Length: 393
View 1 (spheres, rainbow, N blue to C red):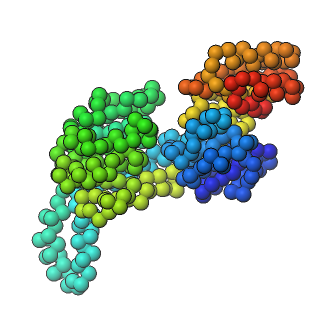
View 2: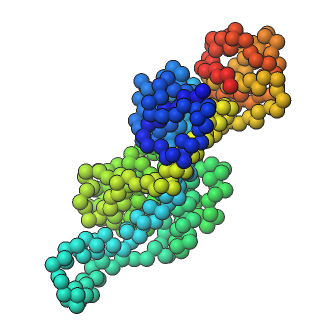
View 3: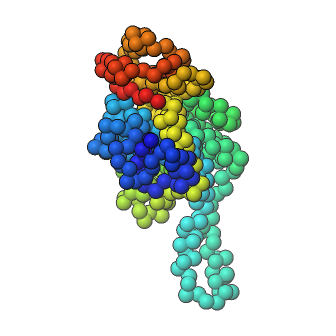
């Protein structure tokens, strides 16, 4: 029986993916094999000795101590793309709000509740509506920083709206490149993208290389009248630099899903209460994706969408005598696989199938065996220098 501890409210559609005959799932689960969470700030103290995996029902994992998990051989999963459409639609809302005087116009209407004569109200609105005139998105240039699952959807949406799209992503994967519309013009640096865009939308994870990416220097490169949209992560933007840019007129408007005290109440800022992925569909998609990844890992050792372990999958060998599989994580140093196989050979255990991959300082192995290994063999592997964790599946 696999034990999975949940934090936050996880969509029932995801929890239903765990058969009750093989999984114990809930907030009161103790000594868990895995953790399933959304926004809960996971601490190192909550990483129990039995823990094998953490799954975040969302793309960002800044609430998970990833480095500590890696040291302990704990696989950290996320769900990239599961909430992409929800964020894309909110970006569209932000662009529309940033192009027309919609918010200011609605606020103005709320001040007119004392006018009861309909004709008088219409006359006043006809005279005042020019204050809220804006511009169309068609024909404008959208710069996208980060061309992953969300960025590529935003690019396609903007092209459908008749916009020109510039894109910047130094870490663009092959899969992301295939998803990207061919009309997107690739830009080699952020400053050039900022200088040539009417709107810029951020879609980046928080890394040391992206923290504070939009700073005072970058604000200085912005095209006059630029509208910046941040539905990615708060830490990517340096808030004092944004305030300075707005007050100097270098930045026309800032639209963000991450409110900051310094920005609240400004007419040139539109803030939303972190609702980028807050749709029923996105929460269901994230929960289902996280649950399926956890289940496949706990049952078969397969890894998909991990932020700290290599992607690796091995089909179960049909007809194997025992169906026993070893999942072994170790430090990525030479000779490890040979040591593991030698121990199995010494125990006269035949390897039916296997796969091995590495990622940075970590390596991961799936090994299917023709017969169940003795406890002594498992102990010998686990006690081998640089082996981090051994699971028998």
